[in-house]
Image 1 (cartoon, rainbow, N blue to C red):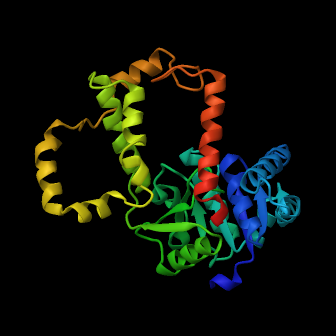
Image 2 (tube, helix red, strand yellow):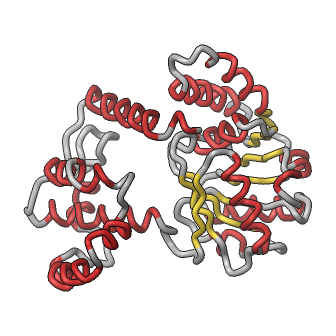
Length: 313
């Protein structure tokens, strides 16, 4: 198999992520088979895709034509065997339950043609564990799309010790072809790359609040109005090279002993959860949130993402 032979993409699971990933492939002219055990998911999936495309192409004269074209490229099905037999590439997007994912991959491995790549969109689970009960482990790979997948370019492409170079190459090529920015994660480790970086920052942010150094809003402002502004252009290791690694080393030698290094979640965070302060879900978390504030922040995020990357894809 090579990239030109991929015509039909099967998405297993048509929830939030499955819908967005189906949209990506449908928007780039692929025939998409969207499988779900619940026939009622089709209406919800198509409504999500319509809403996503309206957000992305608000004001464009051809938006209705584009929506119609994408929707035509996506066929909803509840016939797993037929869909798997037809697929040239598969992305699994079912719930984050290991046994469920393993069962899906066993079925895919049995039905799909031997050369077809089988990808999992898990954000946290070991691809090696997901593939452990399959016969053809060499064709199983991780493709962690970031939410919202129709806007965020990154896809973490995760290899296991069994994944073949050919499968990696085909997957990376296909992702680039549909406008994504794939990165290769060379080792199948918890959190892959981006979540490890993100949650290392979150651990320190929570610790600063827990230790009374600053309140939650101040911590967020410190990020938004300093290094957060330059991150899209100047990432940490580029920044290190820019300022000089001798300076970086000196700073690390001084400050690292004072940074949070607990291997366990913060007791402050645990207390918030135990008190029912879950954030948007309950109206209170690290900060208090009215429904209007929640909606305003979500709209602001979408507008920012559309302006930053949406029109490039």
